Length: 559
Ligand code: DON
Picture 1 (cartoon, rainbow, N blue to C red):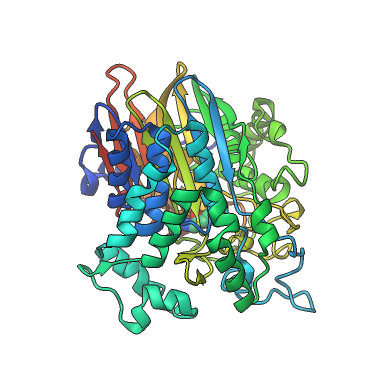
Picture 2 (picture 1 turned 90 degrees about the horizontal axis):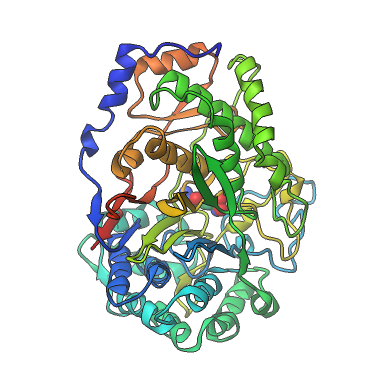
């Protein structure tokens, strides 16, 4: 391998020294485990497991609880993907991604001269795709849960009605997004109490949301898509010039899809199919890396090989990926080992400083998506990632119903050649069309070993999601870290365009950085990347080990 170099002693030292701040052990449990971005939501999941619920019951409980306790990303007004693997071996993905309203048009975010209208696809009601979360969670519960919607929604209803104590990070999330939250009446009233910021220790109650949740718990998802919340959504759309109609809501369907299946060094990898790009890219990158010597984590040789795999996979994302119900997406080709072999040859032959266009340094991060992982005592597992897209979505709250709406329309190609919120420049396959689903990066993933669940993981982070999942997965499977080390370890990201290799600010050795720069990588530095929530099942003992990313304020809870 021409670019393989010896790891310098100082490099190795820094690899070994990246963890001291987080040098704790994962949470362990004999029976079940929930890892999410918010402690009260994790606790809600464990409450349901202990009440006799399975992993799906607990996951649905966590999904509704996060809509209450983590409103910057947890939601009723957004969408996502739930990967379920029941212990009978049958895996399934519930695709509850948002959908473009019927009145959407391909150029709807451009002005008469073809220029993107600033913020049109990110702020306000036109940015909203028809929400899928309520249909998706309810479908998962009905098909795979055991306790029923009313029971699993009880913790969320309680948290909304009785309130919960505001944490530092909750107060900060509101403070930092104040300018968005104060733009819309309904949102300002709930999150800013018309001007008085919430302080840590205050109690945050959401009576409108409690009523909406209770309505869904009693009457099922149709209450949301055709009852009082639907009327409130349409009225809010009319007030703020949005496109979603009663017809859009009534026709919305969550879809059951076969997960993608890849193989990596004897493990089976299950992940999300289109309209997420996540599973396709993850498997493509793992296929490229499978036979290569990945050396030590975050050393020059390993960063080089991973970055080259990332660039090529993300270039394919931009060109080929979109909603496969609308255009042909060559998933089989992209995930085939033969295609990976061709890309690998290219990587080994080309210098890493092959011509690189100057990028536009920007930070793409805001943890406005959220992931949770659940495992129960019977070995059923759920990996769920869902989102409003940006923090607090488009900023609009459905008035009277108490929940925020997404700005997922920005995940479409709003204009060919123009970057979206995450710097992604996307292609024709992801153009806006009525009732189409925007391409996602969400990568809920389950790894199997000998047919049994070994790892359950996923993360927020926009375009960085798939690379976060890749690195955490390699940290466990290749570098033999425990799950807490695996999520705590520093991460990096390359998405091909802009052509930048972005390293987290802390944790990379200066020698490694110099070697990367010398090899021609346009290195830049970024803040924290992702918030990975992971569970591992030890195949020998059956113990569950959970870890919530130290970059966030979440918690793994086991019993
Ligand atoms: O589906 C997607 O790929 C994006 N809407 C995810 C957004 C996200 O992760 C924001 N948080 N970091």
